[in-house]
Image (cartoon, rainbow, N blue to C red; front, side, top):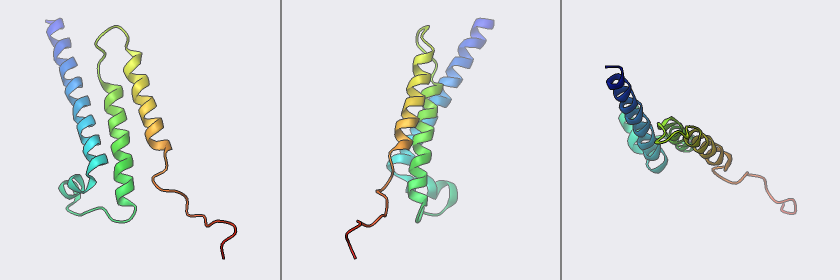
Length: 103
């Protein structure tokens, strides 16, 4: 009986992790769709880059929460942590600093 409960728990965690991955990908690719479904409004201004940043965070969290296939449990956690570091460290746009020689 305990083994059956552990398998059910594993499938629930796996389904939740895949749901986070799918929602994260949708937030990255098309933030308008989920914003319309959740808030009944399209993102404006900083809403679009913020929605994409949230998508990267959800994607990384989903990857980190995937149950391991083997005894190597740290691999998915490291992959999730690496993906959030890489995904959030790249700026969405270049800084708005004018060149020093222009007037």
